[in-house]
Image (tube, rainbow, N blue to C red; front, side, top):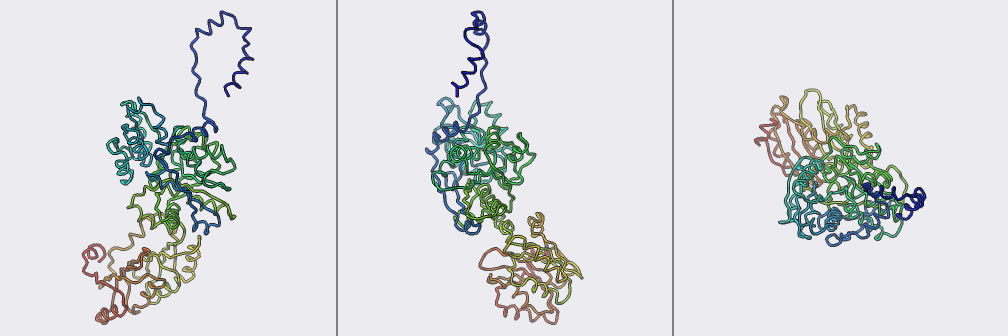
Amino acid sequence: MSTARAKPAAKKTPAVKASPVKSRSAASRPKRIAAPQPLGLQDYLQKILTSKVYDVAIETPLDEAKSLSRRLGHRVFLKREDKQPVFSFKLRGAYNKMAQLGPKALAKGVICASAGNHAQGVAMGARRLGCQATIVMPTTTPQVKIDAVRHFGGDNVQIVLFGESYSDAAGHAKALEKKQGMTFVHPFDDPDVIAGQGTVAMEILRQHAGPIDAVFVAIGGGGLISGVAAYIKAVRPEIKVIGVQMSDSDAMARSVKAGKRVTLADVGLFSDGTAVKLVGEETMRLASTLVDDFVIVNTDAVCAAIKDIYQDTRSIVEPAGALGVAAVKQYAARHGGQGKTFVAINCGANMNFDRLRFVAERAEVGEEREALLAVTIPEERGSFKRFCETVGPRSVTEFNYRISDAHQAHVFVGLSTKEKGESKKIAKAFEGQGFATVDLTHDELAKTHIRHMVGGRSPLAEGERLYSFIFPERPGALMAFLTSLPPGWNISLFHYRNQGADYGRILVGLQVPKAEVRQITPLLKKLGYAYVDESRNPVYRLFLR
């Protein structure tokens, strides 16, 4: 390349025309330092091939997700970066950058900003290379990642918590870098970091020699997709590289569309590993020219993907680690067909355990295997039976009801579904029975809050008795319970949520005619379900009675 540039220059200023005076003048003139040329594909290919990642990283498996493949009609492979020693691909780029530093730079120490996974890579690299590392993490970082950084870095690491996003933490880290003279190890916008991440693609193409139609890569700042795209387009340009972003953290997709880097005012924190307000200059340059398409996914889709990965691997990935699978499903549904080969990079598994409750609850909605409905039924004899008959053989996943009006009852109900869009059909069926119905399946407020808030005190609940029941969880068991109660007994409160366990739990408020009070205990025993009289429970008396 340098030889090719020299020839045109020689033609413009032939040596025979240069006078001695001009030569001395040119010699005395200060030389301009040319700006470094952007690295090309071959430059990145060489850097990836010579990356120093395997001192600490392992070559992770490329496993077929057989269950997901059968469902989608395509072969889906998972690149298991969740199996790295730090449970994330970030180790590759961080260590490669640090390994390129000289002894003087290492002696001064390194500093980075990270939501957790990059920090763990830097921490492990610092311990391996024997240098000190200061790691600035957002205050929103899950505790599991903070603890992991301490574990991997030991005495070589100092942790500083600052800001609510990566961008906030990065600004603080830059200030500390200048103040203390350390080397900043960027989590994504650095050629050596990008090259280290590119080794993921090198392994994929070595492990699967057959045709690959597309590789799906989660994007935060863009380091992983830049390295993966650079290697794939240099070696197998026919393979599509698809970037995946959260709907509330899509800085790269917006930047590429705008033709310049776009700073997001806020980012969603569910997928904290990709919560980046501003992507890198180099990563945007590479993504703009090398990435074939972008897929935007939402929280529910990611929760469903976490469940899909678990069913195929019995491993739980973090939200960022499931973005690739969520996009494969969305991409396959949009483009149709069969027999394609897709690779999704499971980029991390640093999941905060407490978040699993939320994931489990939203996974069914994300896959649209659950319909959430608000159904209004008249407070009159026989209406509840008609409601149950309309539900039919479907499994009830949730049932919330509290008596509040003398004429109408509002029921919050969840029903299992088999296909997308089925909630609309169910809503029409209830409407056909004269029940006003609102489809809440895609209502964020309903999914996040209202389902847990149905209830409260009611003046109409006079004489109410409260019972909790445990019954074997099987199709039809809930409806069998409801229809077994005497028709003269009024249900004033009902709460049920299917938790996927062998036994279901129900909370029921009953208003029983005075003449039939003595029948309560014999009848409940006859039902055969374990139960507890909660009428004197202090929580009930404080909030519901």
